[in-house]
Length: 549
Image (cartoon, rainbow, N blue to C red; front, side, top):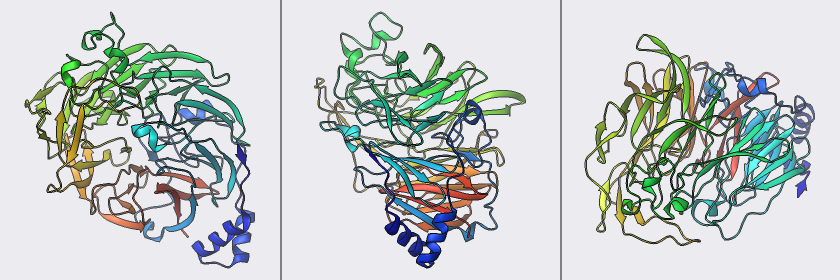
């Protein structure tokens, strides 16, 4: 269903109140601030690593760096940032979306609904409504949607029940609707798609629920499936020894966050989730491929080029769906194509992305007892502390030392920024059978109320193997907000005390904050319209934008 939902007078009243101007002045703002042009995203737009006016994909560009080349907002004037407009989503679920902006048009998702907004004013240009699905379980039942992908004049999004929708970017009209997960109703989808060449690449959620993970690609014009890579090997395939009987159908390794892409190597890098069942390793012996991995895939065929497994035989729900960030840099005297990832298991990893060779790892979680260190081949040296029937205290916690919320790499400061959580959980295990319509944890994890959790923003210098600074957060450690950075050395993020905050990327010194009044569970971005730089971040059911006066 399409709503050309302008609601002019309430919108203008909101502008007047927010900007402290008269109603007539708000009318003038709305009449002069219009989208800059026709949405038509090209391959050049997607492959460019210089982000200024547009933010054309979930991570901004293919590298996953979340780095903006805009320079209008600086450490000297950032204190002048003011709220510009706020968009409220009426749909179920907390917003975890990163907006996409092209030609002055912003695309936002709330649950299964998509919106096109005037990026300068927040005025709704169109709204495509799609009903939320009933009978979903676990993460999918939250109807989470993290955003869209755009190619040409088409917008693509996943739904909570793993359909891929194609919409007309100019009107919001539905062009096609393709279901892509079958044979197990525990599947869901929470990600934004990734466009590579003429294909739309998607994944699924449900790694805690006994599904078989995959990455799939669809023709961007017709919606026809081009290829599918199963992340749990079938009987007789390499790695299948971990999955006796029909366990391969329930092994997890879902792909619930978008990957990154190197056009020069023609390779996509996609993270996989934990094995299923989460905490009972007795029914899935061995390394449990390809769970807790980053996969290097050929985007034309879906064939595996290489893999790296961060946590073999994971027993603690340490998904590897964190963004694999692609950096070209001099490392130990040589120019290298690198992959940098802060992993949920408490270590930050550096790989050669041409072949998956492990280069080094650094522990960043102070509370960490499941492993002693990482060996020369990249495998963890275990402590033997594992879930038990009675319950075992294991660190990092069930939520991980970091998670899906975005990191950022800044080419000016040469630092890698990411949010971390210092916490532990009590992990319990008991062998249970798979049952469709129910989660498949076998059995659970809980937080100890007497143990305080704490969040930090870290800055990591991978060249030195050292942390440049560590910025503590004030709050209850329930935030799930990510990070971005700019060419002027600013680092913007959602902090743990319901603030959108900006710090100096060189030092971690706080420069500016704005209280959004609700928890942040999304990652920020930046864009420009008519030469004016904006920041945007979702919080609760609202999307906030900020700019200089």
